[in-house]
Length: 127
Image 1 (spheres, rainbow, N blue to C red):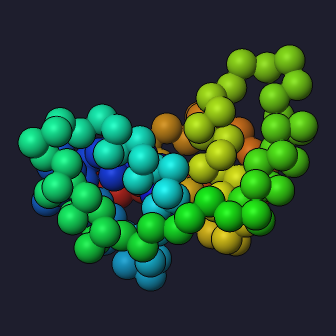
Image 2 (cartoon, rainbow, N blue to C red; image 1 turned 120 degrees about the vertical axis):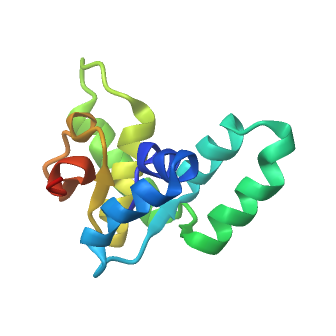
Image 3 (cartoon, helix red, strand yellow; image 1 turned 90 degrees about the horizontal axis):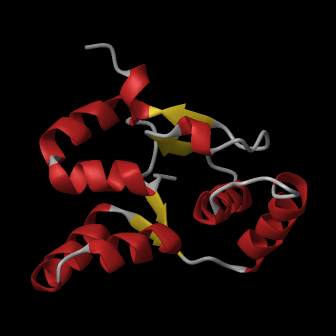
């Protein structure tokens, strides 16, 4: 599952980001509906139609379902007790866990959840 920052890289500089993602050619590029909403909320009104089309054509968008909800509750109880964490990262991680897939991100430090595999796509590629 791609984190929002990776999808933004693809939108801003598609060629460079897509070249980096070639290292993950055995992966299917999935985004959470939560990532979809974050991207759409941040896109300019004039670009929303093109952005929506790109996201729907390039990625498999998974809805946040009951399984993801259950994982997010588990993660919330385990990782957010008296800590400052980012709730959206928790939700994306829980969604990935519910689908039994890893996260690909540029901010691996945001994904402290030991139950999921996290790949930092910018550091895996050797320039």
